[in-house]
Length: 156
Image (tube, rainbow, N blue to C red):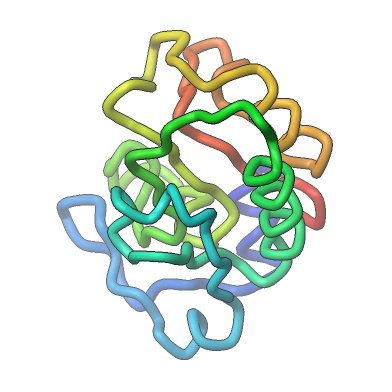
């Protein structure tokens, strides 16, 4: 069973319809029932489209909050200029593919300008470790690396 199939069977569909562009029209009732705002570290707010928080699934929010606490308390800094969570779309914006984990609020992307698909990127190992300890998978370990991408797998 794929992650998208598992998420769909457990939580239902977060979308009303798919568009030819690969983006989707969200079901706002699903969003209101299943997602939560998680506050971001104060120095991460500048590049976040949503300001001082990120919208993700309720089941992923506690672990993300714990991860962000670890990162914020670390003496080592990594500048986060871009971060995004819930995003209603198909994988690679291809409507023939399944919904992305972002559509369910189970994935975030960090600094996509410096962590493009297919490269190693610049996410420090200590940040990757903070996510992995809390049951998040890092896309930088995939056969085609996606170093901006972190995906929650704890309750899925």
